[in-house]
Amino acid sequence: MTQPKIAVIGAGIIGRTLARQWTAAGYPVVFGARSPDDASLIEFATGIGADRDTINNAISSADVVLVAINGGAMELAVPAMAAALGSKIVIDATNTTGAATMNSIGLISEHAPAAKVYRAFNSLGWENFANAEYDGVNGDMLYAGPDGPDQETVEQLISATGLRPIRVGGVTKSDIVDNFTKLWFTLAFEQGLGRGVGFKILTRDIKEAG
Image (cartoon, rainbow, N blue to C red; front, side, top):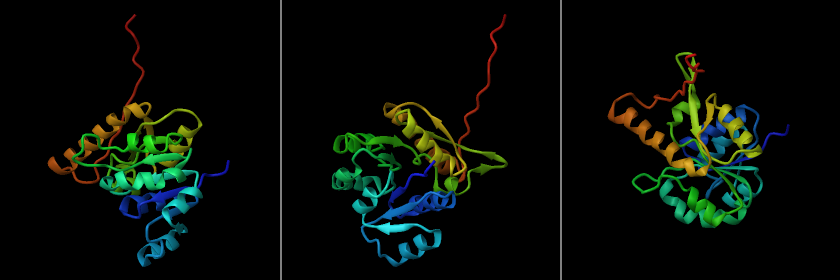
């Protein structure tokens, strides 16, 4: 199966960490940036085998779009890239801290109604994307979004980081994913567990008493 091309919008630590993991797994990656000729981005992208382009050109050339910019910039960024998003798979990894809603699912869906929007890669620190192993056990990534073939693609990208994908439901369940973001911040900083803290969902079959 042909691996989808991924446009990473945002060349910060989240975007760069995920791009490194995906190129290492064989996925073609292009950074979409306001300054694609930035020296730091050129060095990093060249080092991992990724391409660079303007934001809309990168989106237009890709099958999947990861949006990993500052959440506060989404109000201006989404309308500008809406036409290029079209009906592509869009992963919202942004967090608008302090707002009533942390995610930008509604904003993306309003301006790019044909896009298949997922909420993922927002509830853990970048360190967990770089190394998903916790004392021999790989962590989980909770995400929300539509089921079907596009879900399989998103789960492949999550799995490429070493994390196990756990779908909590459609986009209406995005707030549940965001609650894990709040939990992560609470445990990592308020409770002093550090940025390496992660999540693991445990399941087992329960036999009814007969």
